[in-house]
Image (cartoon, rainbow, N blue to C red; front, top):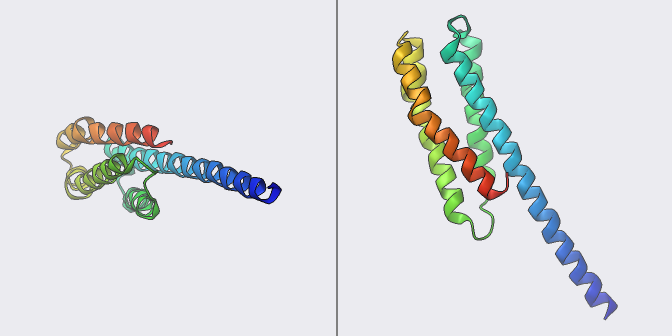
Length: 136
């Protein structure tokens, strides 16, 4: 009886630790997404920070989020939200790479700001809301 109880206790504790680890993983992802957004905003807002170093940072921070997200799994029962998070991030990243950064580098600041303050802001906000729902 004691062995059974000890095994059950360890299993319950393991689930708690696993859930906590997963919550921390989503919190880490939230931090990475924030860094990716901030690097991009810096590129858009500061004309003197549009050089190769900032462009590299913009790409690296976005790639870090994508790589982290690709390694993660949906929490039990939240597969739909996780899928929505992945799809929303993919759309955010694609727009930034194919439309937003090229607009900034071409000096089309008004177009870039419309994207940043429009669809990209909506997607980023949606990602943050979903991360909250997932435990981050």
